[in-house]
Length: 121
Image (cartoon, rainbow, N blue to C red):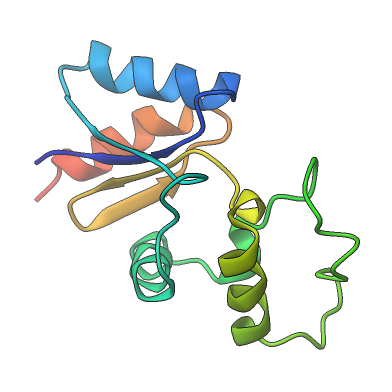
């Protein structure tokens, strides 16, 4: 199984997770999501693997989160996906997908738990 990491090379946590995958013997597919953001269907599939909803992966710091009013509980998931499509910086990072499992690996130590889960049948 080849993991996929949705990576921002400018992010220290993302670099740590990428290094941890390499140290564990994985050669992940690296998706620089700011240059090549996942489409809505892909993101929905990742969220399903995580057991999370779209609000769980929203990045607030250093993004247009507040300006867009994304803290409004009346917003639908579709409205949030629309915002993410226009502003991929809103995706918290790094997200790692390993087979049928996925996790937001923040803090970086979360990747160890994901690797352990992915090893289980």
